[in-house]
Amino acid sequence: MIRRIDRYVLRTFFSPLVWSALGLPGLLLVIDVFEKLDEFGGLCAREGTGGALSVIGAYYAGFLSVNAAAYASVIVLVAAVLCVATLARSNELVAMRSAGLSLRRALAPLLAAALVLAGLQALARETVVPALARRARLAHARIYGSSDPPEVSGRDRIRAVAPDGRDLWHGKGNAHLCAKGFRRTASGGEIEGLDLTLQGRQHTVSVRADRATWHRDHWQLEHGRIDRLKDADPVEPAAQLYTTLSPDALEAEQGPMELGLAALTAARLRRLRKRDACAVEFAKRFAMPLATVIALLMGLPIVLKRGAEGRARRVVSVAIALGLGLVYIAAAELAARAGIRGYLEPWLAVALPHAAFLALGSFLYARMDA
Image 1 (cartoon, one colour):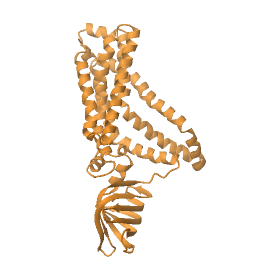
Image 2 (cartoon, one colour):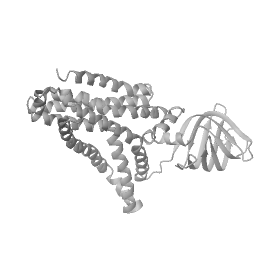
Image 3 (cartoon, one colour):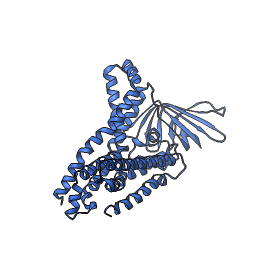
Image 4 (cartoon, helix red, strand yellow):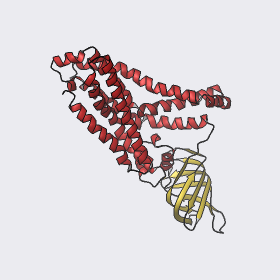
């Protein structure tokens, strides 16, 4: 049952939360707009004012959603710190303790709100953010006048089949698949201008097609052809191409942030160029929502330590709490990059900073009433 004091603390928390949620992404947006003014002018010249506004709107919808998801823990920490500073300035925390409430109980509504916001963040990263991030990437390519063709590389075994059903060639090696365009369909996906090159120890093979449609475990080729580049064999028509470089693999190469958990799981199991990036993003889908709660566990005790001892000390304590939160986010990002580059196992790179700061936050929160 929510008590009156809990509702009061939540109301005090809600106002700075709204301003924090609007302020940080808004600041990033203003900086990005000024950096791209010249590109926006070129876009207007190429596509007209209406087309340019549509592209810019799609870009900034994804830009804001991605940054709001990435910095959600900082946004909530700023709001909670300002809420506690407000309560301390008006001596309301002293009144709560005089009424027999511990500080942990008095501020429990903030942790409950952080848990709810963490759940909403996890839901958004799985549903809303991937679609907006994909649209933002495509809009970004149009802003800079590039086509952003899809491509994927990885160790693979391929098999090419002729229109009459006989095997033309099979083998394994380092494969690179690129296309002029890609879109999702009911069968899986369809690409324009397929171009696959497989480099083995003793062979190099090129498979090309004007159009290719994915069917369960292979690409169905339209006007396909295979060329054994190191042999004297002539170019032959090909109708099917069996490979693990599927539509999911193409999407994974475009950006792990654009994938759902199912696609990330599939990408982690394939030997792709961005497999580690997909594994790191998979782990972050579970860890980053918890960062919202961990940041509060660290920040609230620091604010309360000097929060009621004068304005100067209150400002210093707020600055220390926010600085520690930023150090936490920076450490998590650096560890994630180490996992993407292969210096650490992806799950370990994501887990280490969160586990370390969770231990620190738990220690500080347990001693908050001391």
